[in-house]
Image 1 (tube, rainbow, N blue to C red):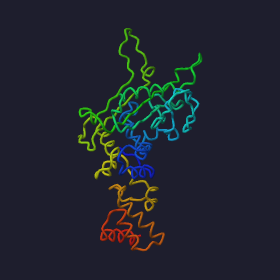
Image 2 (image 1 turned 180 degrees about the vertical axis):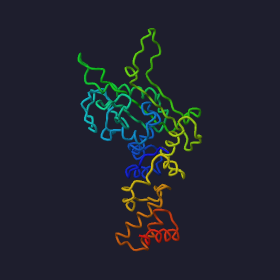
Image 3 (image 1 turned 90 degrees about the vertical axis):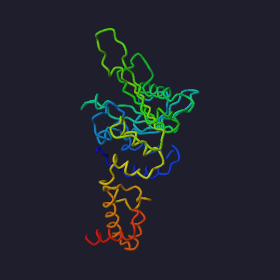
Image 4 (image 1 turned 45 degrees about the horizontal axis):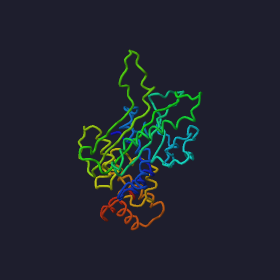
Length: 326
């Protein structure tokens, strides 16, 4: 299974979104984690087909991830990654992307030249806010594309333009027939009366992806188109169901993260965030760390029951297994 190594940050984000009633700040923060973005991009970005989620995660520039980038036509090509944009047009309403970042375009990049893909990701509670989401997505793409250039002059080099993706995840108010579907819109060459083929990269600059969920339970089958993405998003974009951990653990692996386990005793409600494959390692780490801190045995047993949902009998068995064998 293609998994990425989970961090403490994404684990904490998942805890914050456990009981979310809607797409609030906490739930949107989950999408800022590269582990989560790698799963999404791997399924919808054409340039990433054939790459592992770990490779895709490494393509993402972490310093460029921001929710402060304005949807504006002002000058942005001098922005430093991560900098807050402070440009607005006179009398123009200020609006920010939910999430914007850059990632490596492995198709066009070389050892000497880095070509980026510009991505904005929008999480929407409703698919029908009173206007077509598709039109807003195209507008965002146009803004994202134009913002790569400074004010147009005779010296403007349009060859510098890099491809943009606008990805929209819509959760509720989806027409029944459109639920759990994905729509992709892009620039294509529909007619050419000559025998001269234009290089695709010259015009393939904007792709809009609309992901429509629409139900708390996804009943797709393995082998269905986009099964992996829809299953993952249905798990993380709604209040967590009983199988949440089982589902997410197929995409993000926390069991081998030694740094995470060293923090195991400091995470509230960890028992609900430890995945099956790493359960025993987490229990062992907690026991040994508490022993080093000279925590009384009865207190360690209480922690094991609380954080790992163990009975007293099982907590004692684990204690004897790991503490007495060290």
